[in-house]
Image 1 (tube, rainbow, N blue to C red):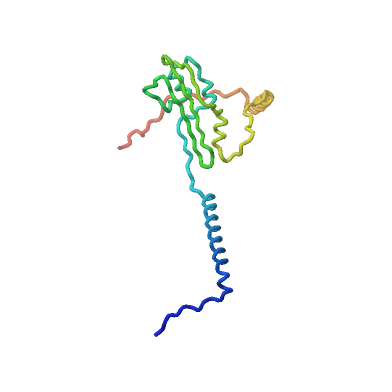
Image 2 (cartoon, rainbow, N blue to C red):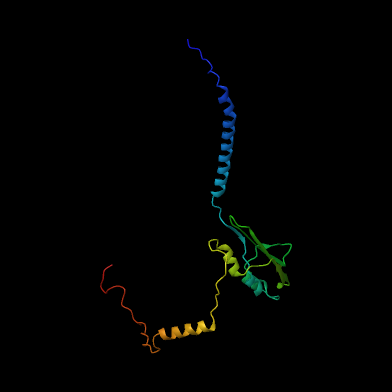
Length: 191
């Protein structure tokens, strides 16, 4: 019969090294776990952009004028996000936009009517259309927007270039469309 015997005890020098090894293992494990959380922060699942409500730009708000009918306001701003039975003379245009890695955007514009005509409107500071579009383009670095207007000099150069490249004004008379058409089926064809 074999008896199980306990292993001989370790020498004193090796036993003193065990707490150092244990501390090193614990610190290594903690370092590994912290590395996992930082990797998890780098690799995140894709979250879609969430847009709710009406985008109202500064240009649209500037097009509003007291005295406009409800239909005219709806043509400029679109249908309101919120209408209330209790506040029939008030339309609320609310816009929120959430994108992963960016601060959420929220804007509100309230339009007030009196006797079915626009009395006044109030709301947050609204972006221009160009500013709003630039805020959506995450790939482009924020910077100077290109000027989208041509100078008088550029317009004259454009007109001269187009005037020389166009064919002469003498054109051939247009061919009159046919007034009679051939039959769809040949005469005497059997069906």
